[in-house]
Length: 93
Image: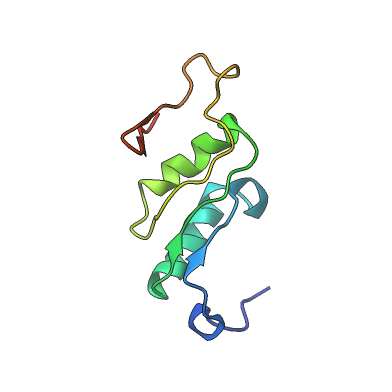
């Protein structure tokens, strides 16, 4: 199934794909690449928890049009070493 209209035609400037629902890390990278050539940013959506958060974090550092990472939890009570935010940034695990 192809996209019938470009991002420019639909006035979309920020895309918020969810890696857990779109088909994985490679599909997120493909969406980011399409967004990049259309001057759109990526803000990955992640409502499923700390395990699911680890996947888009890896993509975030690999794409030039990353804006901000959405997350529901940092993993307190789930992970031995929960994610930490320092000065507004999260270290890559």
